[in-house]
Image (cartoon, rainbow, N blue to C red; front, top):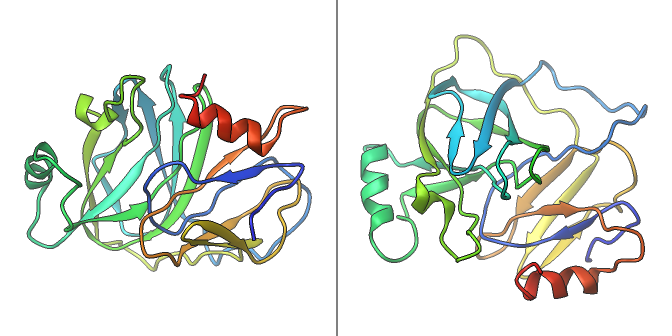
Amino acid sequence: MRSQSLYAVVLALAPLAGCSSERGTPTPEARAPAASAPNVVTFTAADYRFEGPAEIPAGLTQFRLTNKGTEPHHLTLVRLDQGRTFDSLMAGLRRPGPPPAWARPVGGPNAPEPGAESNAEHMLEPGNYAVLCFVPTKEGVPHLAKGMVAPLKVTAAAGPAATPGDADVVMKLVDYDFELSSPLTPGERVIRVENSAQQMHEVELAKLSPGKSVQDLIAWEMGGRK
């Protein structure tokens, strides 16, 4: 089932994997709260760098991404297999082809427009991670090739981890579609994203201007966003 409502359209744009929660505009409706609050980690995206912490505790973590650049940026979180370091990741990224298989995508907040914010929650285990931006420039150069990549170390938490609250909607990513447990409705919504596909996918929420359709959005994307 493809999600289309008066409020938002869900569109797959580029590779990304993970399970996340996306939040929209406030609403007075209540939902079951989490057992305790997640650790909130804030990153700022600029052209072409991330500003944020180098070390955070493990557990339920809400990543908040603020875009202060002039271009779209997202934050892709990858976990490095044991024994791998940020230096080995950078060496792997310099080689032609996809990122190393031992750099495992976790997810992360997708690309807000300049001046806006997006967020996503993930349960993190201790280890070495990295944050990257794969969004390309108008010339097709991934932002990470311009230096938009940074190390992130996740350390053991001092106390018990928070647990996620209930999701309003579960969105399953399949090749090549979205399956929703229920229709999206206006207001603040927590969406649990599960990648059930054979490859990586991501979710981008876009509110269409009055008079515009999904076909207009696809034509704009296929036409180089002009």
